[in-house]
Image (tube, rainbow, N blue to C red; front, side, top):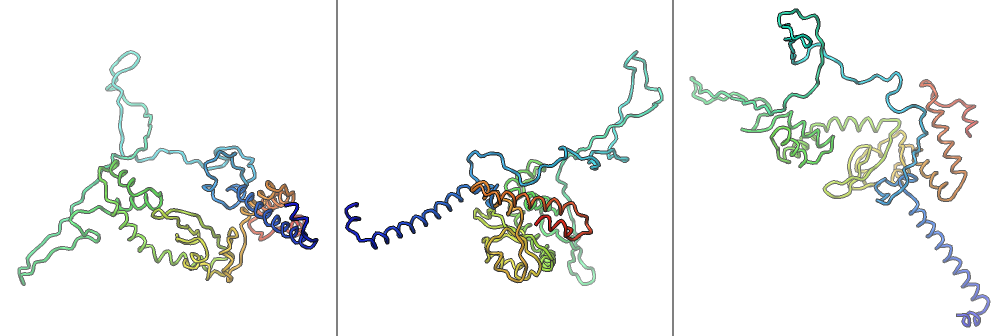
Length: 343
């Protein structure tokens, strides 16, 4: 190699050096990007906690300022303790028959006072069966066979009622309990295990029933002055979908999903988000970035590159937050003097 280089002229050597220098620059950028990827986690970036993996790591550093209040209920906080009711459902009276001291008979002695204790509990759970009977008559005038109408919703010879269905849908859609576990729970509680199709059909009926309400909510979102946007991964039928906080679940995360949902395109106010590039494709609204994500990025820059300006900016954002929280509800912004001091 040395002999080959000695045989080259000066210009050829310069070209080789410049080419190597360019390669080294590209490699330095690539190494820096890889080091940044390894250093990023849910505490210093927008990555979700699930991406941190199972490796042992230090306790998370909260971005919130440490509170000065003690743990537990605060002074002036209204407690939610049990209180006696004036009309209990059941009353159990325990009689005094004899004196516990001298064994005298007290069965005929007048009661001087009562000490009360109340126990709040659920009654024994049992499915109730209501039989609906529709009369059938033969018209004495025309001979037609006439049957009385069953109540709305009573469609089959044997079926589950609306209250039980509502419980199943609540546990599935709000408490996020899987179908099989709901059926098992009902079997344990009620000695009845409905099929999973009961819950699935109920969910479809519920989705149709609330459609007008969802349309009204979407109309209000489009007219809002400020809308907070975010998206989080979730699994639907074993595949990753994205829960868009604005409105819906979609198989995609980016711009395609946002346009399908159909809200950001009509938004005229402010869209507050984490800086995901797809949001900036919507030009009708004004964009504002979430300071919680700014704090994470500033933490990353300071921890990875020891840039003191990032630490200073981190503290400044927290100071501004503290000042905003301290102003009265009548104020719309900080005083000019304070704004100048912060700048």
